[in-house]
Image (tube, rainbow, N blue to C red; front, side):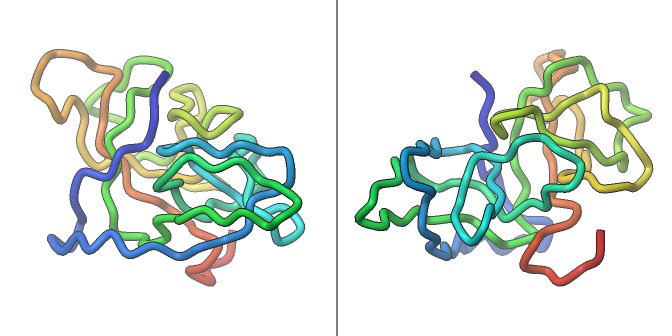
Length: 149
């Protein structure tokens, strides 16, 4: 299953600083999943247009009534390697995408110049292995950036 894996930073400085949030009770967030906040609790991103991106899970945690916390990459400059659910053409570079339900991969069918999306394609086939579904993606609009959707 595809995940969002940190691969560097658009600014060249990858500190991978984490911010910790409480996970919804009974919900398991998995390392590499895109996340959103729901009533103050972290959940896997639903892929919904209205859900703004909080960040990406740095670890796997199951929410409990004891308020389990998960480390989240919230830096908008981190580049993430992801294997989209469809092929990406070179024309998609600079194009924005939503994530699939569950927050595990890019939804290739949602390409748009701008809208309520979560990631922008920076580089196609970053491994140079001819797999057109893989790319480097940067968060486009994040909850903590204060930018309007």
